[in-house]
Image (cartoon, rainbow, N blue to C red):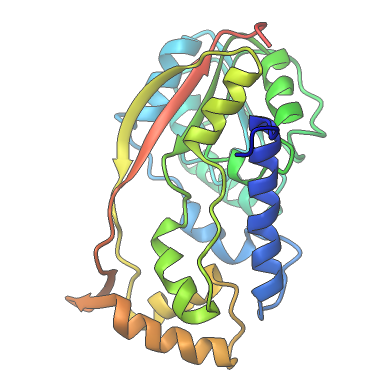
Length: 276
């Protein structure tokens, strides 16, 4: 960050440059719904001991109203809804809303109201708790996004964020496939700097880290990496990806794992509203 660049401007610049890099190098088809190819992987695992849902439920209370900003497939929304009076799930992706609807029906979470909208355009009543989990990575202008969360909350605001970009495990592939280092999205440290610049000194609670996971079978792994690197089928970049997969991964018991992958730290940033 330069001496004249604010934390807010740096956050938005990092987001813009990361997105521009992907658009410049991509050779795949651009889907109208970005999450449609990946929606099935976001189906929630319902666990009463889910640590983020547990912490959020304590803030909301059993009679609380909660807004989940960018609820996705309901990984947190569904178990959390079982512990509060009402949960409003704001989600712009149709494919993700379909996953969330099925999960809510399957687990009897009939107190979830789904709002088909981005957070920026959503018209929702205030709630005791407003939170966003792993959502800010997709926000091009962070200041109005956070201010709206702050205005909508009456008791607590919370952000769940990684310490490294969510797709950091794919970063080593970029140099071999695209010939340049992958630019970083803004994550925890950038968010903390933004909040402090906006007058909020957030409480920072570490959560259990995201552990490295298998990429699946060799063909599943290739397809996953191809989509994460925005590579079209049958392109020269796809050939380079095959070579990178051989160099950077290993197969164990029929599944592909990235060499030297490390856990991704998770933090919950929270504050009382009205201080911005």
